[in-house]
Image 1: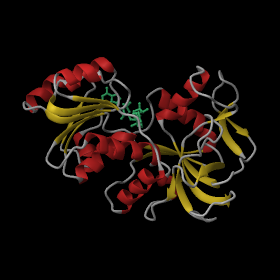
Image 2: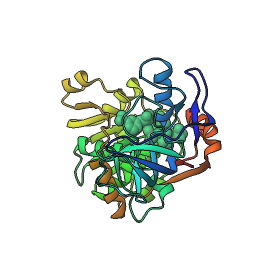
Image 3: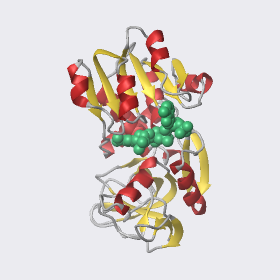
Amino acid sequence: MRAVAVAKPTGSPELMRLPVPEPGPGEVLVKVVAAGLNPVDWKLADRARDGVAEAVYPLIYGVDFAGKVAALGPGVSKFNVGDAVFGQPAPAAVGAYGTYAEYVVAAEDGVLALAPDALPLPLAAALPTAGMAALSILDVGGVEAAQTLLLVGAAGGVGSFVTQLAASRDVRVVAVTRGVGELLMGELGAADTVDAKAGPPVDALREAYPDGVDALVDLVSPPEAFAEYATLVSDGGVAISAIRSADVESLARRGVEGVNFVVEPNGHLLARLAAEVSAGRVTVQLGAQVPLADAPDAVARGRAGKAARGKTVILV
Ligand SMILES: NC(=O)c1ccc[n+]([C@@H]2O[C@H](COP(=O)([O-])OP(=O)(O)OC[C@H]3O[C@@H](n4cnc5c(N)ncnc54)[C@H](OP(=O)(O)O)[C@@H]3O)[C@@H](O)[C@H]2O)c1
């Protein structure tokens, strides 16, 4: 099959031909229609290169897919050949079952669900990582209707899903973006939008929200900038970092719950996400669709922070 993989730890992703993987007991083989591109794709490859994660080479890129079930391993009962599905590969060493490939193996009890009817498969491929993270962040944050959520990195993959999901629950979303304006964020449901291009807009936010905000979800800031944003969270509130920037102990000293969030993907979360999409509470902001052969360039653009706004999907 055609796949985009790195041949050795120091290699760059390239298009190559690799054997089609075989589904084991409880696993299905999926013919991939599209793979979603996420920052975690190159973060995993980097962790493998640095010896931090167990990996196999050639290491196939990608963790999100949508496609059709092509074959069943022994004992599979929840899915049938031909089902339109989306999700993430079966647990394995990094690179064994990447999704930038014509076929991938997924576990029926793993991160696999029927794709939402209303959504073409290329759009469903954009959902798993960012959508499950967004749903789960809101579960952890426990933000309720009429409360104020300060969301930093709001225009990206995770942020656009958090914005839509929170707004659908009548949470007041204050979006901090880098160059994405009020009009676009307002369409997703943000109540207020601030551009951070000139640096963290903490002073302006303090003036606009003198009583503070109930929750901070920060998807992008390193520890120092995160700590600055967290000063805006009122007593009893919660400050969540998606990139381990929260100093939980020092936040606790001023009555704020700090969380270094890590998503735990599972089939139940994925099915809840599909239901949110079917109910019209979440749409995918598509940035670009690229053919498999162009995936290495798309990864390079993502790494350089030059990706198109919205999700990139790779058409296999
Ligand atoms: N902990 C977890 O379980 C988990 C799960 C999923 C994702 N993540 C992490 O969460 C982060 C976001 O993921 P994603 O998929 O949403 O990435 P993404 O699609 O690249 O979105 C990031 C967004 O943040 C913007 N941004 C960057 N720096 C900013 C700043 N200083 N102020 C305001 N906005 C800024 C980016 O703007 P530009 O386009 O201008 O760069 C982009 O719109 C990644 O680091 C990812 O690895 C963690």
